[in-house]
Amino acid sequence: MGSLAISPVCVGVAPDVDRSVFLWGLGGGVKLESPSIIWAVTGGDSTIVIDSGSGSPEWVTRHHRPFRRSPNQEPRVALQAAGIDPDGVRLVILTHLHYDHCHNNQIFPSARFLVQRAEVEYAIAPHPVHAEVFEAPSRGFTPPWLATMDRTDVIDGDTQVAPGIRVVTVPGHTPGMMAAIVETDDGPYAVASDFCSLYENWRGFGPYKRIPSRVYVNLDEYFRSFARLAAITDNVLPGHDMRVLDKAVYP
Image 1 (cartoon, rainbow, N blue to C red):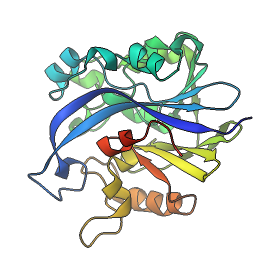
Image 2: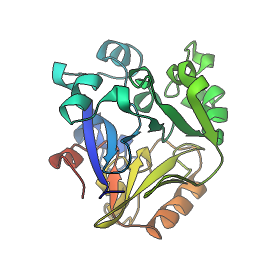
Image 3: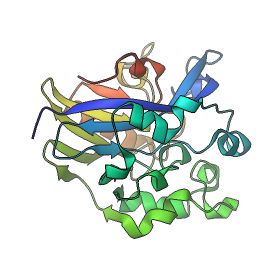
Image 4: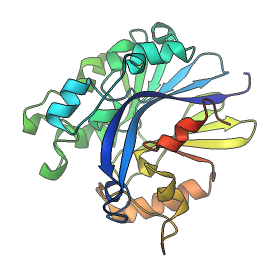
């Protein structure tokens, strides 16, 4: 195994998202650009991808929120520009099943997918307030990840997925939320996805040391997950923060 590195690949941006959506209702009135990110872990025996990003701008704008994607942010194009051949990817970790993290599974024709059992069970029949973000059947959707279930490994709990890469459960935002822990030359990094959408979720804001998202299923679990992740690493890469794109590769 070589030195593992993590690359965030932007596949579109939701403009003018109120910061309070990510920070438990704090900082309202401040508008942010929110990137959709596919993460690639390179340097091992093969490239491992984390999350597959949002659907098309037309789809996301029609069903969720305004969303834009430039030609160079088309998922296949953006990955290839980062040196990643989607056809050669053998494993994709789905941190959770919200629409903006699992909509492009089909661009990885040779990959197997990894997801928590608790996530699948909830995503099929979530509470009504969560049905839209999961694109659940109860709202008339066919969730996009169902198309690759024949290539999906449903797991229970923490799992070592490759040398230097493991997934750990961090429920709270969703029941089966997981973070990918990548061992790098600079120590372990957590690709936290929506568990920490912004750096402020992890670093704190105002009087709060850690801040959950305004979208959650269980606050008790959320705060236990903060403590759990803190025991592993302080190097946390957020899932929807434009600032994470300031670097092409981590560490």
